[in-house]
Length: 418
Image (tube, rainbow, N blue to C red):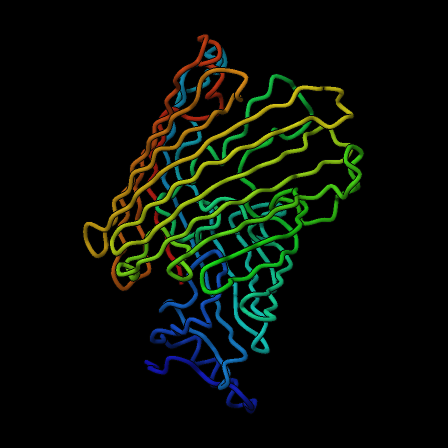
C-alpha cells in the first residue's frame, strides 16, 4: 500500500516510468487531494475527494486524474390504457427491466497552472452521445475564464448538479418530457431541458459571491457532434443557442451536490436566474426562448432545492403558422440524512405540458431513499414517482396530456464511482 497522497513527476527515466506504471496498476492510494484550487468541476463525480488516485507535479501546475462512473438500474413502468392498442397486445407494463444508462470512463486535470481539461466517453450510449463531454477551460483569473468544447449548457440546477450526486436517480419529468403541440410536424418537439452541447462560454466567480456564465452553443443537443448550423432565415443571425446564467452564492461557492455523506457540515446557498434562445434556420421547427429561476441550499444534513422554468416557442416562417405557445413547469425537493450513510428525499414536480392555451397540468410527486455504502464509493437508491393529472377541461385533454409518460415508475439504482 502506498500512503503518499500524491506522486510528483518531473524527470523520470524509462526504467522508473515502467516501475511507476506497475505501481499504479497494482496499488491503492490514500485520499488524493483536497485543495480547493484543484477542485475542478467535471460534471460527473466530485474530483477533489478520496476516490482513486491523482498524479501531480511538484509545483501543482500539472495534474492528471482518471475516473470512471457506472450506473445500473432496475425499472418498473406502468402506463395508462390511453394510447395503447389492445388489438396489438400492447401491454400496460413497458420499458421495464434492467438498464445501464451510464458507463463513463474519463480523465480530468490541470495543465500549466491555468488550463483545466476533461474528456470522457459513455460506453452505454450510442451515436454522438458516446462522447459525453470534452472541453478545456482557460483561467485568466478566477473572475475570467473561457471554456470550449462539449459541456453542460448553463440552464437549470437539476442538470448542472454533479451527475453522481443528484438526490433522485431520475431527473424531473418536467425537464425531460417533450411538450405537446397541436400539429403533426416532421421535426423534434421541443422540451425545456437543454443538457450537454457543443459551444464556448465565458464564466467566472466574482467577490466569492457572484457567478456568471455566458456563451454560444449549437443548440442541437448531446447527440450531435458535427457543425450543422446555418443563418436564420427569420432573424438573420447564426442559428445557435444563446445562453446565460447568473448566480448569487452569499456564503461562498456552493458544491454542485444534492447529497454527499462527506458534506454534512456545510452551510451554503445558491440563488440563480438563467435564460437562453435557441434560434433555428430554415428547418421545419421552432425558435425557442427559455427562462428559469433556481434556489438550492445545503445546511448540515439538509438539502433543499427548487426551480421554476418557462418556454415560449414560435414556428419558423417556413411553416406559415402564426401561433405561439407557452409552457411552464418546476419542482421542489428536500433531502435529509437520517443516518450518516442514509438520505431520504421527497420531490414535487409539475408541468404544463399542453401549454397555457389549454387547462390542466401534470403533477408528479416522488420519494427516494439513498444509501452510501461505507468505504466503497457505492451508492444504492430506490425511488417511486406517480404521474397525476388535474384541471383538464375534457377527458380527451386529460388522456392526451400524459401520452408517452408512465403513470407509475419505480426504480432501483446501483452507482459506483472511482
